[in-house]
Each structure stands twice: as structure tokens, then as C-alpha cells.
Length: 134
Image (cartoon, rainbow, N blue to C red; front, side, top):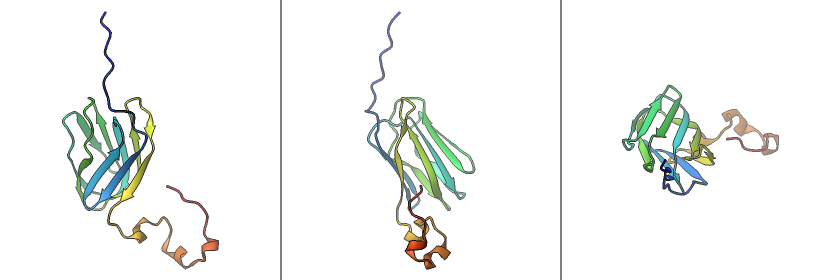
């Protein structure tokens, strides 16, 4: 029986960045990505711009992108219209390992990025909880 050759893939990614804003979704990584799960708020209309071997499935709060081949995922995932707020993202490599990923917002006012209530802006900094959650 012939041995199967190991697929020649890009190196495993160690980091990834999801960018959104200006009606565009982008993913930057330093290696081969096999799948992406995006949890969001809003009701955007997303036009995915993916290679033929990539599939996008979307529900009311989650989008999942996955590949059935080793073709690389393009940096620009697609465009959107309507309100979109990305709450979390999970990126996986071809060994089904989670890749540390950050969410970055382009051209959005700072007040929309804060994870506090407007009432908290009147409190002294010493009274606010310490730490940062993502």
C-alpha cells in the first residue's frame, strides 16, 4: 500500500488578527488557517469573497468559515453592510489547534470600543474594577 504524502502547508500560525470596519472583514495570520468562527452582534449582510474550496455558513449571531482543501484563506474575507460588532473570534490551524487571535476595529469611535457603561464615565478611576476582559 502506498504511503500518503503529508500535505505541504504553510507553517502553523502563531497569531492572527481579525480586522473589521469600513464595511470590510479581514484576517491576517502568519500561517495556514483551516477555519474561523466569528460571533457577532447586529444584522449585517455579508458578501463573502472566498476561494471555491472555502465555505461560509452564517446564522443570526455566528459565522463559520472552513476549508475542504489546503488553499490559503485570502486576507480580505468579504464586505458587509449594516451594523456589525464582533464579540469573539476563534481561528484554528490544520491540526485543529486554536490560534491566539485579536479583534481590531478600524475607524470606529473610541466610545464604541469601551466595555463600560456611560454612567461609569462619571466615576473616579479608583472606583472602577481593575483588569480588562475580552
